[in-house]
Length: 176
Image 1 (cartoon, rainbow, N blue to C red):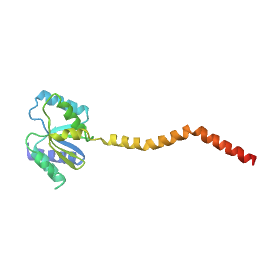
Image 2 (image 1 turned 45 degrees about the vertical axis):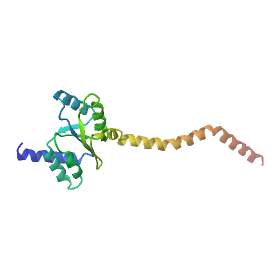
Image 3 (image 1 turned 90 degrees about the vertical axis):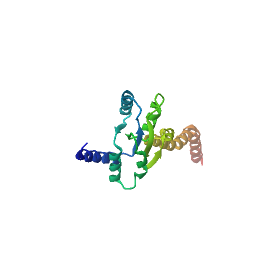
């Protein structure tokens, strides 16, 4: 790779990292070509982009974005590295967890989730349990609907009583 190709790659990576809130640094080193292709297919199906990259190029791209925001990740950029980019925070962790039912890799080196860094393969379980933005919005909507449903249910069940009471009061008013 010549200097202009490296510069172009770094620029493309800068753009990718700048527009990604969630990315995972992983190790696929002992998987066979067939297994890696199978994993890539699953990534594609889940709308996860996987790139095998040189650690030095990744580090240079991250350094050019920010001097301090990504420094915690630099320790994970050693040995064979693949980066998984996703629009959903827990999707790569769920995919890794599912794939490892039949394989011992990929191994999670680190994950960058909304400016927080998670280190180590032992984080896969907790990362897979994170709720996505859509799931959190759904939970909030459900919580907001619950009190309204209770009030409406009470009004509907007691509707006959309230209308009967209003009718009786109206009749008394007419007699007086």
